[in-house]
Length: 210
Image 1 (tube, helix red, strand yellow):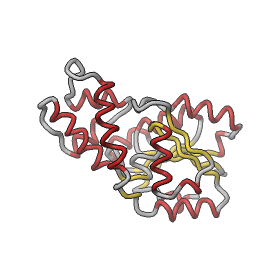
Image 2 (image 1 turned 60 degrees about the horizontal axis):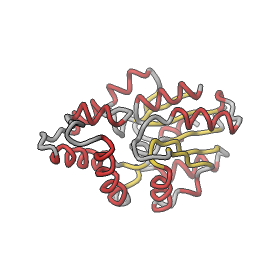
Image 3 (image 1 turned 90 degrees about the horizontal axis):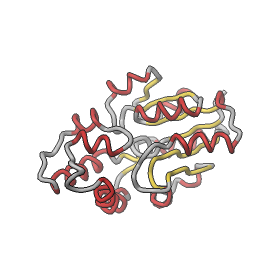
């Protein structure tokens, strides 16, 4: 029985895909590179973020990854507060709480930025823990996930992680928990199918399953 639900944030709870593509193309414009399409974006998006920047055409011999990350976050954070949550997010979170589920955010976002977003969207009340990383470079969240599982004593067979990327599947494997993916986020359904797990159209799929 599933008692613990871990949710990715970007592309799973908040619909920031258009914003991320816009800001990526602004970074490409800084280096006088051609913009990429949404289709291309969803085919190359990956973690760590540095790899997808390189795939998009950013040259780190011109601007360092650290500098580009700062440029991105300075624009992303305030603009993200104008994004929308995906349809059905609050409905799903409320339903899961009523079912007695423990819900956690597990994100590669910097934790203070993540808290600001959750407070802005008034969804903090739904979560037992909000887990983010300690920098703005959007690296792997595997270490955070494994440490939390060890500290919390959660039984892996009682937990599921829901995200929108193949990295989220990798995280679920490291945690030893089940995985579900949503195809409304930063990677295409075709790419997500490589994981061989159940794919929801969006987070509302949880209500039908749990």
